[in-house]
Image (cartoon, rainbow, N blue to C red):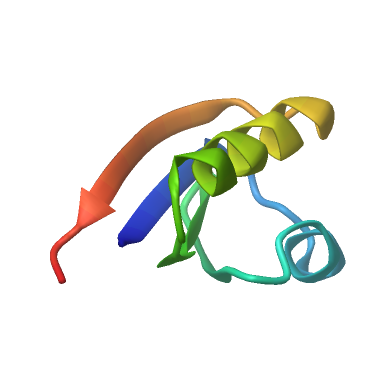
Length: 66
């Protein structure tokens, strides 16, 4: 399953790479978009917990078409 997680603010490249090594990312105005394959629900919740631990505000989460 592929998901996209949109967070408020612009994350530095180092934070994107080290905080979410399994995801690709891109920066759009005032947001950072993280996307990629998520193997199961536990992985998804782990990513959301990581966002919370880093103080990120998730503004959107959705599953991408296969």
